[in-house]
Image (cartoon, rainbow, N blue to C red):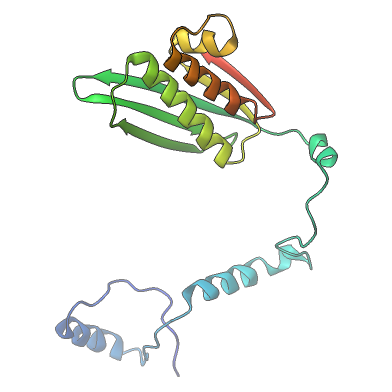
Amino acid sequence: MTYPLRKVLHKPESSGRMLKWAVELGQFDLEYMPRTAIKGQALADFLLEFDSEIDGKALVAVHPSPPEEVLEEFPHPWWVLHVDGIVNNGGAGAGIVLVSLEGHHLMSAIHFKFYATNNYAEYEALINGLKISLEMGVRNLIAKSDSELVVNQVNGGFQARGPRTELYLRCAQCLIGRFREVRLECVP
C-alpha cells in the first residue's frame, strides 16, 4: 500500500542521507511519491476540513461590486498610522507603522538618498505612510506624528513657508483628500 508523505521532517541533502531515510522508513512499508501540486492540495485539504461549515456557500462571491451608496452603509474600520522622520550624521530616513483594527502591524523603514531637514523627513514619513495606507485600501485613518510643525501645517493651523515645504504640504493634503476621513494628531 502506498501513501503520499504529507510532512517532510528533513530534506535529505545527499545520497547517504537518502539511504538512512530508506532504512528508517523501510520498516513501515512506505513508498515515496513526490507531491507536485502542493498549493492545489492545500486548498483541497482546507475545503475538506471546513466542508461541514460551508453548507453550499461559495468561498468567492461572483457578483459585481455593490454601488457606492451601499458601501457607505457599512462602517469602515479606523486604521492607525504612526510616522516619524529622522535626520542624523548617517543620513535621513523615516519609520512607518500601519496598524489595522485587528492589531496587525505593517512596518516600513525608508532611507533617503537625498538631503533632508528634520521637517522634510517628517513630511516624507507622512506622505509615504499615506501612500501605503491608500495601497492597503484604508478609508478611515488616524495618523500620528511627533512633528508639531507638520501636523499643524497639514491641519491648517500653521502656514507653510518656502517652496519645498509648500510642495510637501500640498502633496500631503492631496493624499489626505483621497481618504474618506483622516485625523492627524501630534503625539509627544
